[in-house]
Image (cartoon, rainbow, N blue to C red):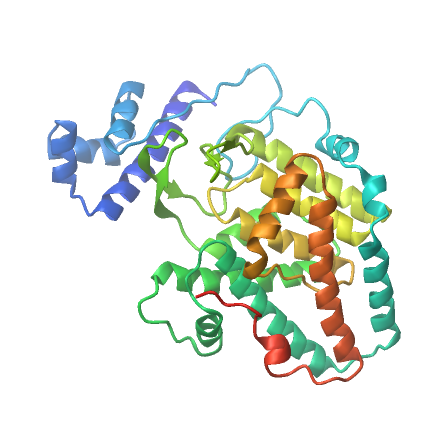
Length: 392
């Protein structure tokens, strides 16, 4: 990118941050000008005219809204990769990401887990009972999608109860006193999963553009969000939908330790290698689908490619992998959130057994529902349609 192009990109990014800040805080351009110590006309020019913008000006704008700009330098003589919507050039990893996965995961230990054989046996029993009533299968799928929607959003802090979620999805009725964004997240999740179901039926591999499309559909449009930096400062940031993160999103855990995700400039390369690994694993079909889906989920969450929504999209791609192999969508209940987090943390340290066992147990539950359907059993009412624990 040329010097002028780089400055223009930085200016446009800064303007987007400033506009989001003014909207969130309800600050006028005149008030913002006073904060900067300039005239209103100068602020208008800064926001609306990208010409002759200095780096010092961009830094001053960032400081005025509690931001710290970050520059990433790349060697222009080396080949780099760019993807539509990505904000930085990314060099190739030193080794293929798929190779790192194959080397770091103790596959032999995972392949001995009883849950793999149990899941395969139940699926074989279900398949032997086909054809199953299409109406019954559709009924189970719709119930599954609603419970999945509620739990996946609740894990991330959505305040709607299961009953309120169901009422919104079925009748479009909102819950009084609950945040508008929580309602939009429920609708967005529904829309993204419907697109994902169409992807399952396709015959092409999962691509980065697919993942970004799911993110954009789920979150709808850019929005401002309050955030706390690793050093404890309160700032504002813009959540960009459908594009990879533009700034680090490391988090400080409850224990006070910092948990690090991939740096923004590394995300496109890591995502490409991850999806290449998954495509090869699916094509070779040597790993059990549960293993493919679980490792895909963990590695996606470990990269944390987006500003927000990584957990929900991560569970979406996990279920994509399971459903592509003929297994049902698997629901992680909000009541099991702490166990889920502990299993993810163990995988961070290289031990995937707890996570595969945890996801496998949820898969067996989903298979039991399918088997009951295949047997013609009544699955209506609270038996399958109501989560065991709704803490709100």
